[in-house]
Length: 145
Image (tube, rainbow, N blue to C red; front, top):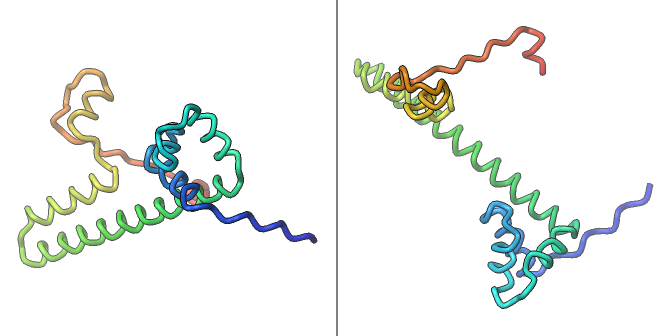
């Protein structure tokens, strides 16, 4: 089995371009101009050429995975912190604080739709003052997926 040839290292500007692609949500023009300046007359064409290079695509993928992993860690630690606050409040008999912390955990986890979401969902705004709980029901077969 033949080993693949290693990809060439990125220049500082190419690495800046990869980072800018993440920062600007994939906007080729803005990412290119951030990394290489705005004096170029064909930034989109040159950005596309950069994106076609495997080492650039790999760098963008690595950055994206790192950002996603950091976001998951941050979200997870935030949920744990809110659970700690809830438990401490329960232990001290502060049930309103405990309930608020648990409700905040649900919002952070995406379990509730806020006032604007509930009205937009059903088109009427009826019941928009009450958060809606989203429940997922699975079977034993679904659990392994």
